[in-house]
Image (tube, rainbow, N blue to C red):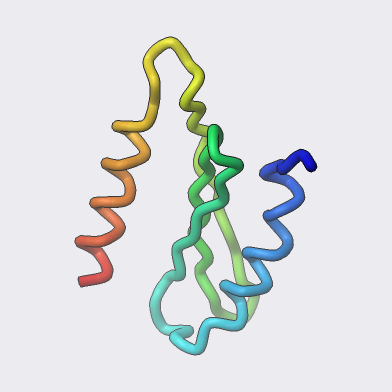
Length: 79
């Protein structure tokens, strides 16, 4: 079975909208194993979300280190 970023977007947004902590932005990530996209959801009267660009491990520069850097920054923001 093939996985796609688009197929996971609706599901992760549903999970993020169900988050009880509405006063803070909610962060998420979709991965296919080789592609990564980060999501930020800001709740309010009209919830809004934003997507990062797609990070690919198969690019010549191997963007795994960029993905790890984003994850570390998210960890620091949560703690």
